Length: 149
Image 1 (cartoon, rainbow, N blue to C red):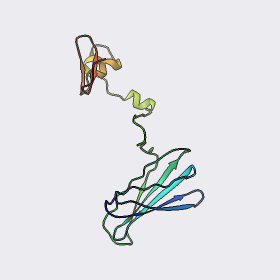
Image 2: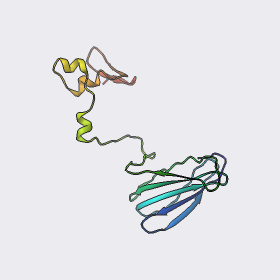
Image 3: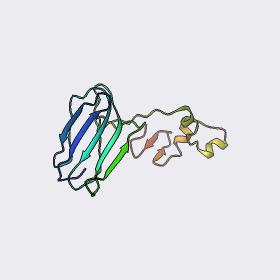
Image 4: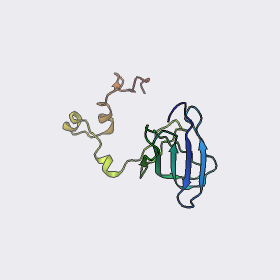
């Protein structure tokens, strides 16, 4: 967002056509509350900048979504369109990272070459070869400098 500028944000429910407008604060933050679940697009604009539109946003019940944009200096008739397509929104309200892997992604996971040569394809053997992973004499693992477990 453009710090110091107040942008106009228009959130449109693509299924019903309902539009809600909000202004950002000087830090570029905005909220549009009490939206119904469904598909949305977010249009961002400010005088002297090219507008930007983020589409294909899917809002579920009780879900909070953060939609950021970056307006570029331009003329009033320029427009940048960004499609959120099949990507899931980033949940900034929680402190964990979760991801689901497909069968192909699991098969394609890197396996430690040294352990595979000896016949082992265990996840433990593969983990021990990754950067930031250390093993002590008791075979306890430490990841990213944390206490061994």
